[in-house]
Length: 312
Image (cartoon, rainbow, N blue to C red):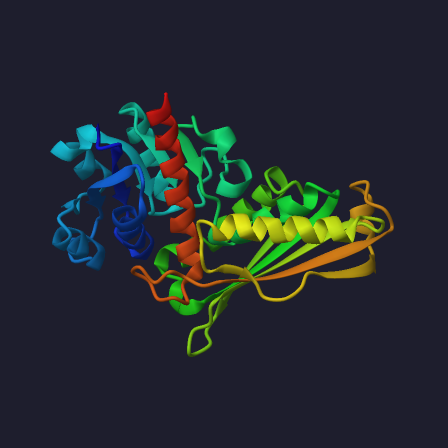
């Protein structure tokens, strides 16, 4: 249902990501309003917080959501559960014509990184937000590939172990596989690789991301540098804590033989980009930038989808 230019949404998953997203919807959304928070643990802090904020809740999962009177007005559902649960959720929501924003690594729908390819996917009924590492690094790979051929793109996402909940830990394999594919599909790299590091340091460190791109030796470093800085500005428009930590680095390298099979030259240029993501601390601590960038990207995606519907 839409009223006052705002569409009703539901969040499935009352953990850290779902709860932070709920607060972002209530504080920052232009065209969204909370209709329901869904969980499976009646004692979860997320459900308790939603109730205190006046949001309808259920602890009976997707079936409980469908049975709620608020569900008939829901136009978008955010899935913040797990890759294994998403297929079931997506099937049921599709039967009811509800658009799904998938924050799990399930990747049933097209990958979306708002500053890269949201415009092309505004009419999709199920979109996947890749992973936290993907949201932070794929924009950089794409910025480089827009001005130079990226023969290989590798990202290393380092997050505080305290910001990695049960869902994140259970989906490590899906994280690396999904992010690697997205580096190629929407980042534009011929070959992609993703690594995640859970850092146990105390006090907890902010999310750090390193991006390596191998390009042709004669690539224009000035254009690459300008493209990266422009892309950082685009991401920080919806993730204010997203920033470069130091100047972009360029190094001449000899490429390993395995890259020659992809058509890469024998020598190339390694582009190294070092990023930091500080969370907005709406619900999660500021060091949990890995979760904040996911919820911020999901909010931007849903808001733009609904803005298009209002304009029609």
